[in-house]
Image (cartoon, rainbow, N blue to C red; front, side, top):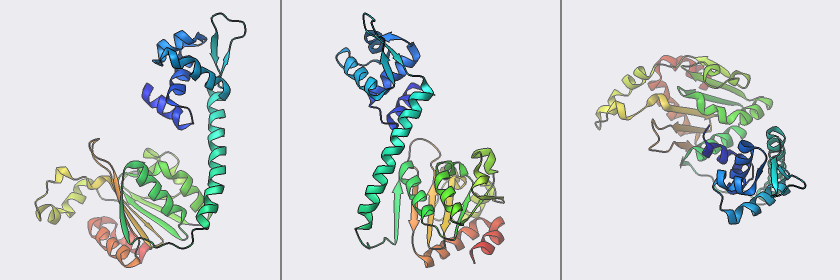
Length: 276
């Protein structure tokens, strides 16, 4: 794990970037002076005392009594991170209650027929929202189910409501997402990437499209209660963002599944039995 990743994770727990750098450096150095922490972390000397004071108020570092110059000790990592995580959870619970109250006062709003989102966070929130509204079933077809690791909480809630959740894939979920079978049924039946590309030859030819530029094995289709369908497209490299297309129309959803059945020829019977 790189330093940037650690700093990013700490900021997600409510620390500022300078606070995250200071705590990270103090854990690395052990008992240290502000000067040493500034040198290790890169925090300007003019900001380091202010930063350490804020960390002390958060309870995750402490001053060493009677030391000269003043030395600082980090709280044990488990205790510090548990403390920060509990505060984030408490804040989220409070904000959820207040915001849901405001949401309920808005009344009925017009719903979009279809829309697209871009970026991993937007894709994940869109999938989670659809799953949390499910009442009967969630069916997923994907050769890249690792994305589902971000949706455990939504799957757990849906399962507790009695929602049937099934994944059709080429790879056992336990090998990509450990423990995924706890939330959903996994059926290993999807065709290979080569078969998918073979099925799309017509699209590749009209207009001309190089199969190497398109990764059908990085697609995921999710159908929720037959009323909303989500197509997720994951890029093959870091030069582009993942994106998703949401369709909220029973007619279009059924038509889309006809397309899915054509492409995923080896699982046509399975999907047909589940959907119709």
